[in-house]
Length: 126
Image 1 (spheres, helix red, strand yellow):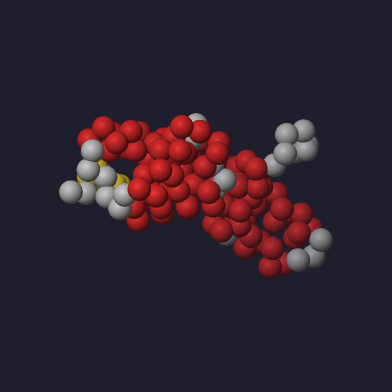
Image 2 (tube, rainbow, N blue to C red):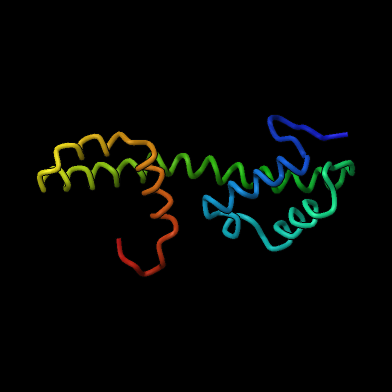
């Protein structure tokens, strides 16, 4: 039996995708405690589908925590990423790069800038 709540399905493939997304976005270690990461790791190594209601509940708590961080990153992407993209675009236009106007509306560029902003070293200045 595979547990499913909302759009998150508790099987090995879904857990692996969730972990991979969190690692790629740089929030795997920031969002989760060591015990939560270990729970996901052990589950991925031991089983292909979750049958225990207690394990399912614990994994759903981990998944919910990650989803909140994913949504927060989306918010930050809009607030921080596009603000930085507009600044960089304006500077590049002043330097004579006319195609840089499009950078201010580029979603991928805004996402990149938001992730870079969150992953910058402390004390590295704004």
